[in-house]
Image 1 (cartoon, helix red, strand yellow):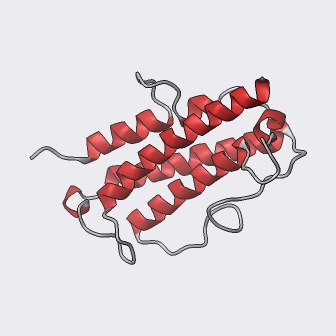
Image 2 (cartoon, helix red, strand yellow):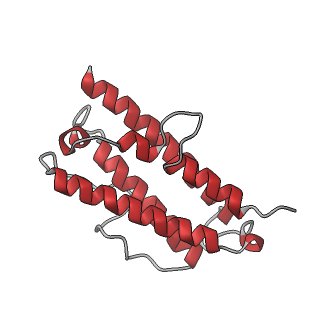
Image 3 (cartoon, rainbow, N blue to C red):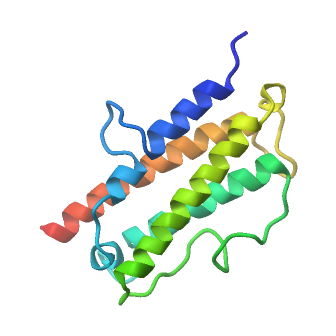
Length: 158
C-alpha cells in the first residue's frame, strides 16, 4: 500500500500556497491586502479577514500540537480559536500576523512530514477523530476560509 503522507502534504500545500486548478488557496486569497482591507468587517458581529487568517494559524498550531502530543499554551496569541483584531491597525502588525501564519504552517507541515504512516488511522487522544481525518480536514479548512476571504474582498470593494 502506498504511503499516505506525501498525498496529505500535497493536499496541505495546495490548500495553503501551491497553485492548483480550483482557484485561490488561503495564502493567495490574503496576498496584497493592506491592514485596512484585512480589518474591514461586513457588519459589527462578523469576523474580518484578519481574524480569519489568525484563526487559520491557530488551527494549524492545534494540528501540529496534536501530531506531536504537546500540551496547549504555546500559540503566540492569548486565547483560542477566534482572536479579535483591532479595527485600526498598522500594515506592520498585519504583516507580522501573516508571518506568524506562515511560520505556524511550516512547523505544522514539518510535523505532518515526520508523522508515522502507521499511526494515521489512530484516533487522536481525547478526540473522536483520527490523525488522517484531522490533516485532511485542515486542508479543507484552509480552502473554506480562502473562499470566505474572497467573498469579503468583493463585498468590501463593491
